[in-house]
Structure formats: structure tokens, C-alpha cells
Length: 190
Image 1 (cartoon, one colour):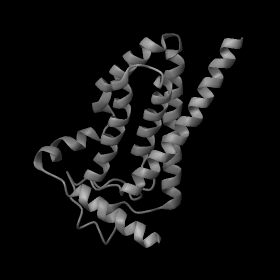
Image 2 (cartoon, helix red, strand yellow):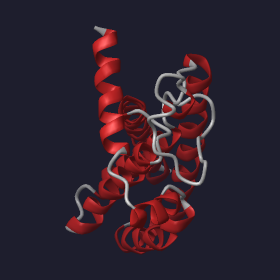
Image 3 (cartoon, rainbow, N blue to C red):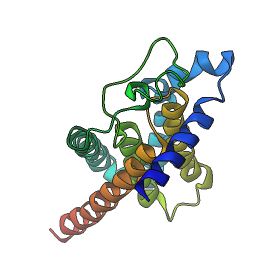
Image 4 (cartoon, helix red, strand yellow):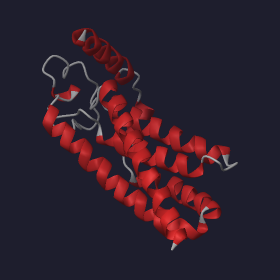
């Protein structure tokens, strides 16, 4: 069964990685970086601040700590599992479309990009779930999906690396959100 899943994972990777063209080859290396998304993050901040102005510093702190926790946990899993990235897999590396000779680190399971992106997206969605700002909430997950797809496009992650990272990020977001709610309840009781 594991071999079947691995074959499907490889086929999906090769399909997603094979959708390259010169336009996307030029922009995807930028889209895989957090820095290029700063204008979007500022828009999120403005939208969240309107709804949660009294808690904005606490939210920023929780998101920062969540990012550290998600990144460190994904790296810990990556270094424990030691699944080679597609660009380091001897059977696949010659079939992968590589841009600017970028191959990523040696191991890829679970994807830190996916873990971090879905940790942020899920935490912010939970925070804003009762808000009427539909497009703001949609943008959290749209960004996370685009951010994750860049990793397939670049050939440095299998879809299962991303799916597992997204699950880990969502789980961490849920835990942090529950702590956030409890923290704010305790603070209000004081």
C-alpha cells in the first residue's frame, strides 16, 4: 500500500512540476518567499486590527510563537524521517524541472513551507471565523495553497510532504487558538 501511495505522490509531483513555462519560471521563485507576500500580510493586519484592535499585540505575539513552533516541529520531523526531496531522489532528480539550480535541502518530509503557511492561515481563519470579511478569510487559504504549490512547481516537495505539513500546521493552529482563547478569557477575568 505504501508503494502505491508513493507512486501516486510521484505522479502528482511530476504532473504539477511539469506545468512550467517561462512566465511562471520567472515568478515562482519569488512567490515561494515570505518576503514577497508582505503587502498581503499588511492587508491582513489591517483587516484583523479593525476586528480585534484591543488584542492586536497579543495576536502578533501568538502568530510569531506559532511560526517558531510550526517551523521547528516541521524541521524536527524532516530530520527524523529523512525522506529525500524529489530533487535529491536518484530515481526522479533527472525528471524534475529545476529553476535556477534550486534543489532545496536534502530532506523534505514534512514541508516547512506548508506547515508554516497552514499554521498561519488556520489560526487567522479561526480568529476571524465570525467576521463578515469573506475575502479576507478566503485569502488566508488561497495564499497557503499558492505558497504550497510553488514547492511542487520548483520540484522540491512531493504533494504528500505538503499535505502532511498542512495537517501539522492546522493542528498547531488549533492548539494555539485554544490557548489564545483561554489566555484572553483569563486576562478578562483578572
